[in-house]
Length: 252
Image 1 (cartoon, helix red, strand yellow):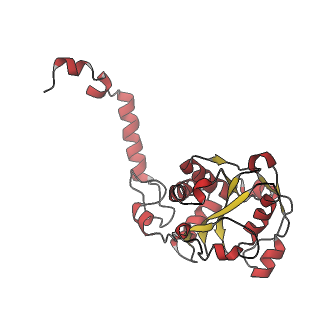
Image 2: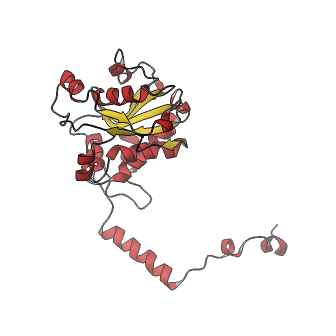
Image 3: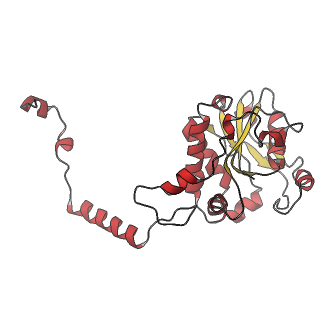
């Protein structure tokens, strides 16, 4: 039974929420703006509900997740066999041309939807948090862009994916650990061997103390042949005591 004494112990703000005319007006304006200019799902383009963030609930459940982080010998890790020594590798989504995952990455990479990278990184990070060997990672390091391309685009899409992972896992985020020391041509239309030749020895470690003796989770937006990630991993592994695992937002 509730007594006067028990009521006295409950903060007043819990007993009664006070609304000011100004706060009510702001809430009504927000509701109206949402109806007129709804935020769209970055994957399917449909209007989000007010409690949805970046990706609609339907897409959250139906986007093709690989669950490769649970499979030690998955198709992604096989890209690196015989090329570079890594602890593990996986991608969060399957990538297919013309499908929703491609749209998701396009929104992140070319439309300024940085929230896509942050949210997807968080979701992926929660999966990795309790999965060895990813769970022992000390720092998340994104594949860098060349300074010229970074200035042109304005941001590195992999930074936001990496930041989301680091936040979910409660570990460090190292956006400046690696640097790209040579500008390369786009990888999009290159064959497998040409991709490896194109990125050979073009990355260097910019912050040695951040990764020395550490387990680095190296991440990129999409892994296809793995050539860019191999080059980055080689640079990291030149630092004594460094171990590398690899993650990607999607794998083709």
